[in-house]
Length: 110
Image (tube, rainbow, N blue to C red; front, side):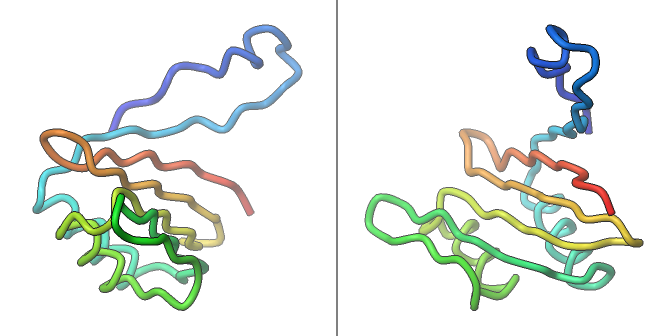
C-alpha cells in the first residue's frame, strides 16, 4: 500500500496531527485476503454497506460475508469495516472502481 499525501490542514498548521492513510487498488484475490484477514485475526466492530442505485445501504447487523458478497456482486458500491487489531482500531473503506476495488485504510488509534 502507498501512503496518501499529507492533509492540507496539517500543512497549514503543523500542530495538527493527521493520521496517515494507506491506499491500494485490490484485485479479486487481494480483496478476498482483506476479508479473510479481518475475519480471522481482528475483532470486528462494525460493518457498513453503501448501497448501489437500486439498493439501500446497511449499518450494523451485517456480517463480513454479506458485505463481501454485496461488494463483489456489485449490489454495493462500497463497504466500511471498523475493527480492532492488536489493540489498535482500524477503518477500511472499500469502494468499487473501474479495474477493481480501492482500499483506503486508516489507523484510528487505541
